[in-house]
Length: 451
Image 1 (cartoon, one colour):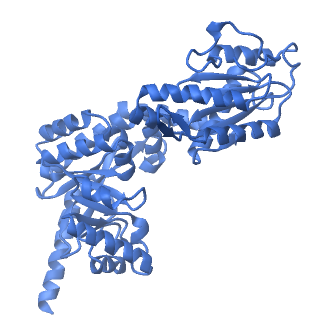
Image 2 (cartoon, helix red, strand yellow):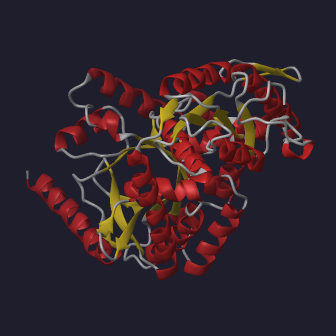
Image 3 (cartoon, rainbow, N blue to C red):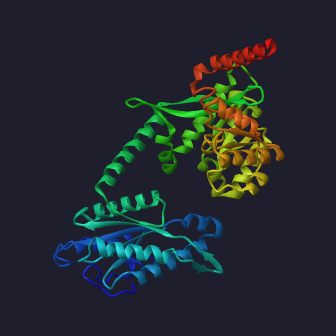
């Protein structure tokens, strides 16, 4: 340790410190917390605990290697030691997670000031082995005894505040609030229920059609995940997919979606229709995806040309080289690949040119104003023209009115999807929807001939 000992930071043996950063290990920091709450350590006076972690540590490790990652952790440890007061204790809890114990007395004002100082310091670039590395940090603050009186409980409160800071944009600080504990309990309960849902087969797929704007021919369906919760009924993916992604449960769920969509699509009455399946970033990053696609196609008998995998810009950005190679191998099988929600992430025209894609899906935020907002129409027109020049189809999402449909067609879009054509329907209703859309086309054709 390179700071003066204080009431909560009595001398520790060498084995109490982290060999990489020189900061306290988790058990030693908890021991310091215990002492701070005793009469000898501070007389039960208020003190603060700060939990922090780096915002982009994984990308540093992945792109620059573990040696640079270790150098970054050492440099972070040095900056933390320059930020804390004499007598405070700093520890590495594990990985890129750290904690700071502000010795008594310390309240919300002083804790927030220190947290802001740490965020500012760790937001500055690090020069490591010739690389300028910018990582940033988020901080959560918990106070003793207002938030918790036990060391482990206080650390959990600080962690909850840290989690909130990261959820709300990173590079910031948050003070623990009791509502965070209730949210954490709800999150744990939902995670447990999700695990049960996987085991008990509570998921199902609904399908929403996408049609060709020139003539209204049905081109295929997008498979949309639903959770048939025993108490809450049908749960939309927005309510559970983010948690599934955080916990890694998206991997078994995603594999189930792939197998089920292929099996159900193989039984549709029109064998020409494509089924589109969303692929999460975690799936795209794993080598198993190609094998899972092969297995799903083989088990179902679905032709590879009838399967389209939808990936997001965020998924492509997490590991560009791996994503590009995976998409290329999938297309070599005959599977189609589309870029979902284009325009909402770090959109790049270069990405459309370099990635092996078959389709671009234009986000509904542009579609909603295509008939009334010149800016939205210009964006749709530009993407459609670019798609045409690259040999890509362009599908507009969230189409709700005939006016939007006509504006999209006028601006060069090739396909559309949305409630104008149909809401998502259960698997058992797909064939009836296929017939209804076909009947509607025939009726329009007859009307045109009669006119």
